[in-house]
Length: 540
Image 1 (cartoon, rainbow, N blue to C red):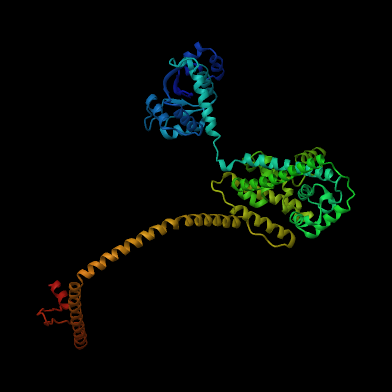
Image 2: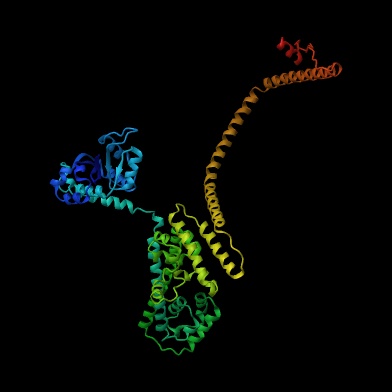
């Protein structure tokens, strides 16, 4: 049986024919030894045809199709023109060797060409790849390397194309920065409190919030200049008039030491930096919430934006999180405790990062492990929906959150929760309803415009009809009156004929209808022919 080889290079498709397969006996070791030697390998494998790509864009298109296991029209024409034709009902006397079994099955399904992909074929293709520039004489030195480099770059660039609004890397960076800012703001705020407490130690007990303390320290600066006329401004900062008065009273009897103007300027600038960092932290949190609603809306609505972002960050990406089983997701963030427990044969941890969820805190101590396991299960479902669904919706996350609430009630009060299949059906219905609502909101604008046009056209048509009626009004009225008179006269004659038929039928016992001639004003004769007579005529 003849063996042909399909080699997809960066420059084009190449078909090669392997000779002497029977002598070799499909010995993989013999082929592997002869691959490095072009003289030996060239006697076995010879080029049959080479079809170059028309452009770099065409090469990228063919490469994408081959990687996905799809048969393109170009490849099909190459195979059908250069390979022997397969006759129906007869077993082909050749086979085609391919490197990828997926493209081989697609070729066999579409063109009925038998394909094989095994270790022997792979060794032959390895030799073709090694000596390909020698097989194709038109290729110059360096052309193949340039084509491979350009195709590799364009193929990689096409593979990493993504939806800009669904980049989970932004969430990972944002949550890392948020954690770093929390630590930095906390340490800087403590530094401000410690630095300014040398000048005004009583302020520590009055103002507990770090951000508010920095704001007040920036406003007061020198406690000796703080008077009662600044109470309204202090009230605006602190939010409590009594606390503002307490600060002014404490400044009058403060035990702190005086600071030089240079020291006060440095404290003022540092307090301003802490305030700016706090403001930036608030904006970064809003950005994180917005990105989580775009990337993982169901996970965010189920467990919260911050905890969901921490899970994505720890897993590495939303796809990695979606691939994790719920048992792995449950202990994400507690790897050290897990391996320590496995090493010492102690109790393994019940929860990791999902401990920061409010559901775990609300559960009783004996049910925390159960709640963590159930919550991890729902988080795994939500992450998979967010990762693999094409449309973004929070319907599933809201329903999953309702399920977790019901499970909490079940542990506390014994109320039986709903079944998972019923909840998923209701979630699908609600998401479909939301989509239809969005579509109906977009449609009425166009429909109202069409209705307005129709009304205008109707009004114009009615105006034309009115104009025609006013012009020919008298003639139309005369015609209508004559038609109405004729219709009334015909109805009267039909009613009289029916009454006569009924009376005759009662007397004779049979249905008889007579012909009656009556003349109207115009001298017309109206004939009423009975049905029985018609039947008799038809029989005769």
